[in-house]
Length: 375
Ligand code: ATP
Ligand code: MG
Ligand code: MG
Image (cartoon, rainbow, N blue to C red):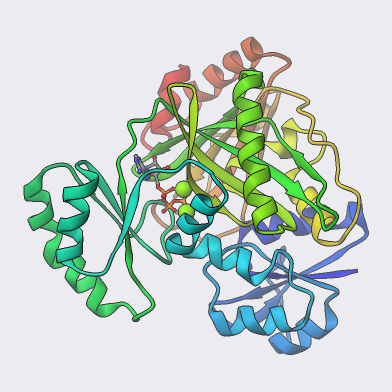
């Protein structure tokens, strides 16, 4: 079977790395260059998108910000999984918020705004602080504004007006109450066409300047929190009649989960499953979209995933450390760019922590600011 992935980044690459074990061939369509490529070697194939869709048995996506004409073309082939609706829901915060409300999933109170008058109205009804998020195209905290005081409203007014003026008329902004969360976690799971669901244990996400730096799956979250997360996952996945791997990012406040956002795809906070779970999220995504049996989501080791941002090498000693696996994406170095990640496992949480302490001692603290917590 052949799978075509929309998007040719690291997520498509890591899916392709699992393909041999499932007897699948994975091709990628680079939406920016309009080229069909090998997701691992990046070698281009002389093939149009339509020809690649025709040659594929299944079409899927590694990101949600896909031009509508391409998405429609794929949907029309009858091979797209998850559906165009599911992908668009993840790519537009207005649709996403509507879905969460409709599926009875708790999320931060919000208003959709289209101008400064509506922003002021949102401030009056929701209160401050607020987070403003562009409805579409946001990732890694880009396209967001934070408002703490009334004078911040005046401060961002020009910015917001400019943003709305220059964006296509399909744009808008979601003004969301700021959540004073204790932690952030995500739940990742796979759902197949028959509606079977397999969820991984929840993982704790640590962000710095809007970007995910570390995700830790210690495997010691309470059964109560895991059950809550799985209920949320089921509500969302069923509402979308979802097929594939889906990620749900949540805030934890007072033992309750509030959903921040969803990602209709494999997710950075699920990379730990490559070394820490019986089946990786990449394998399970391919299995779900190709109508193959889902693999076990059982955790096999407490695991931490550390993003490598803007660096293209690590000290050699890292490669000698037990329980440490480095994954490089083969991308050109740019400041802050996700270049790879490190998975660290231990037999138990104590061993994981000891290994994280060793790792912290040899990584550059400027490139890995959150590693200090383990030192
Ligand atoms: P990505 O898709 O890369 O995860 P994004 O650009 O879609 O990021 P969000 O996940 O919405 O952005 O926000 C980034 C981070 O900002 C969140 O993980 C969280 O730390 C913080 N944040 C977002 N919304 C809120 C909120 N309502 N209250 C408090 N913090 C928030
Ligand atoms: Mg997002
Ligand atoms: Mg997010």
